[in-house]
Image (cartoon, rainbow, N blue to C red; front, top):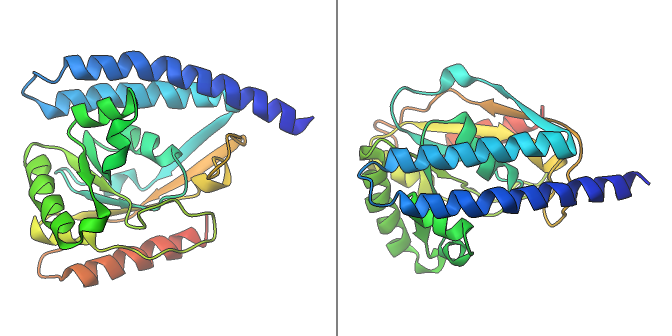
Length: 238
């Protein structure tokens, strides 16, 4: 009986998600001629606010944030734990206007992919190795200069709660090559919005924002290790 209720609530959520995504995505395309990428990103943030409100209404799933005082005043590189699709939505509400580094295949998804392209997200071909890093740095510097934060999931793919994957160097590479601070983020969204499941379990997702890491004088490997150690240590208490 409980699972049946969860399925009904999840289906209601996805109906609302699609209903919200289509008009927001189309309007993001209309905004492309505007010179300000920040404006387009703020519009997408309104979409994220609406989705999280609907998630709370339908599935009784909300979130709390600890460490907002650690968010710097200037655009930085966000390196976050990746457990579900939830954080790809919620980070838009928690942090200032932003873009994401993502698999280029995501851009072909109708409506959502169009919106990701419209706001200036950075698509990466992971198989291209060194060329992918060069593209990440070039485009990442451009977005940071425009006043946008850059969100990267260093594990590259979603991991189940309790699982620790390799932290890839891309985010730390961008931060050190653009003289940007890194803001680490830990959360336990995977407990409530699980990978490969449509069910959304009621509760309160905990998000923790770490103190920004000054990358001045540090090598990418050192930055990556600091981020990994902080996130994985924090995950043990979530």
